[in-house]
Length: 113
Image 1 (cartoon, rainbow, N blue to C red):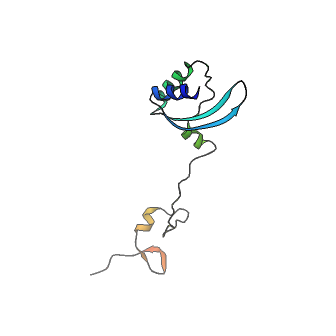
Image 2: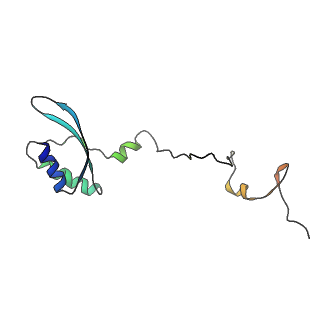
């Protein structure tokens, strides 16, 4: 049966990433198969082809990227410490203006000639 499933996935242009054995009994074998697809339309084409295989029942289908987003946003952090840590209400414009040494609130004036 696994061979027919793999043939159906390959015939639809899918790429099998992993096959995990979930449960096996005398009556059935349940596997979790990770399949790479180009997009959601391609994924539906693969599922349609699998549903046509005799003896195969397609269970719940999930998108790996969608599952990663469940429960919140993906956080991206710098591995290198920021040499200019931001304070509240400190924008990039404040870092670019030269300041008078010893008085961070007062901008430096242009040198007089």
